[in-house]
Image 1 (tube, rainbow, N blue to C red):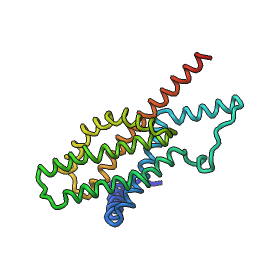
Image 2: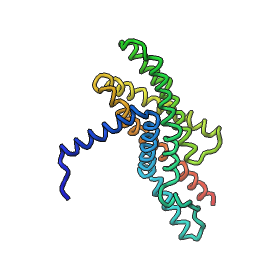
Image 3: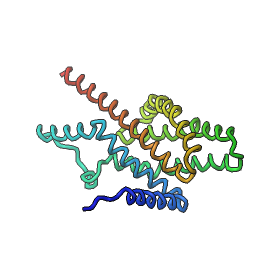
Image 4: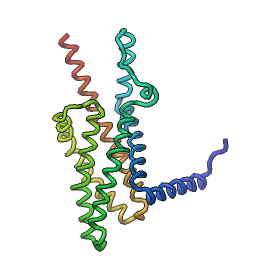
Length: 229
């Protein structure tokens, strides 16, 4: 098969970006929800593999089979795609994507008729980082806890409280710089895919770190139980 030339790859990228932006203009809510669902699917898949969680689960299943213990029952769809990956994707489609869309719609309406001065740009960035970002990150952490199997509201709140500040510190350092860069160097049309890419990278990082900590905690508990026996 002949290799695709660099100009052809560039043309394909332009065509895909144009199609995405066109869809975003026609159906912003649906496009953002589907985009978030796709990115969440990839994010959870990468986080499970990078954290070692997927390997640990496979090892536990093999150990259970070797010892003659019944393995956890899986539905038909779980033989095709991991359950938590699917749940995280649905969370993006039904919760995160629409929530992100409506929060920014409100923000855009608030600043729609204001002149584009440095003060208004600063106020917009502050609103994004002090209002919208904490809401989205809190919902993300809570959903992550629920998808991981947590059902106690008190424990979910504890997870959010324990991890939100650390997450926000990184957001407050990185995203104002990203937003300023976008405002100065990129046309507004490509802001959504650009911000999605940055959010995907950082979301994958925090998701992976959270899974690593949870896995370490589980192993520590298992070691304690083994010593007691």
